[in-house]
Image 1 (cartoon, rainbow, N blue to C red):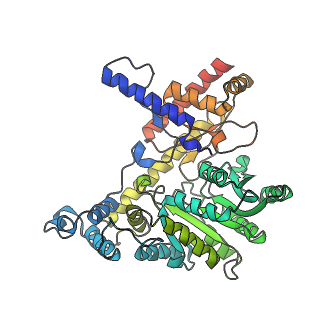
Image 2: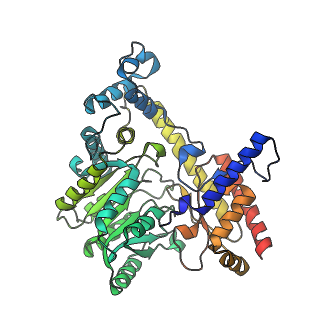
Image 3: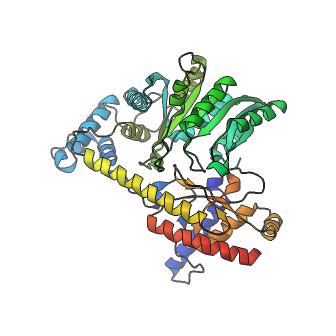
Length: 473
């Protein structure tokens, strides 16, 4: 089992960071040309400077505080806005008065699931049942739970995009299943096509693999594409045709930057394709507080919704959820706040919306800075980041560098990423950790650090590539 975003390059980055810190403490010379590591290896917004949204943290604080020093303190209205106080009271009531330190229902607090269902209904204009919603420790826990239910033995296969987020390949390997890759089309901004899906499925079947499910990541990670409505409808029809359970990873649904793109959920696409009416498709969809505009990774909040899933399967998933007792209450609360912000007539509404807009617009600018900047470097090719938080450029690497990498027992893009790290302090993830076509090399980078840092990073990427080519020919 390998998990690239926390892989060997990151381990070396941690070691370098500790070494630099020791030189500062001891007053000795820093052996590197930089004084900090720029971590662009993982979508962890707050760790690289994104500030928390104010109102959600105010509500969280009031939920955690004992009532006598929180919502019932005589001066509480001098310290917190009225709409935060009111929401905290409502949340505490929904938890039965037990506070944030008590276990909850294994699917999550019912009032929160009602809010999630309403959020989905307003997004898709399709009914949602709160009893078919599980609040989980981020999307990752839900994904792991569903894959555990799907993979019975080594004959079971799951179709995953190439490239893909490594939680899928790692978990399938851990559970002893078969990875069935389908290639996204880099020449068409990482679009998906049905011919490739059919090819991949038939090849797997001919190899004796029982393919029972397909993973969709939209907007894409690591590729940053936003699939069109047409592509989404084609995909759900493909899954229905072949009786494949659809795992729809939609954690970046708010992160859409291209003015000509829009997020279309798998559920909405299935509705438009007429598949929901006759119960022709099974969908697990995932969302998270870690991404979007909240970036609250450490809260571990998220949910999954079951659409058209057999009641027996839902019962088995409930048993899996029960074995963990419940997801973290802080994450449950943050999920509730994510899907239902302050009221429009509340005193916090304008500030809340302004803070979210500022985050989105800055991400939009950073996506352009990085994708256009990387694509302008000779030897690089980078598709436009229409959404999510990442760019996934391809990088030309010489035959000599490939031979050196082989002699060291690493992939060529791992050699490249380690060189980049030691030369510039920028920590990226080798593209090989996500899967790619044979002969392609590159890396994934976030564009989460500040606009200033990312503009400097583009310059450093270019300088390093020139140095790398001079060293390895």
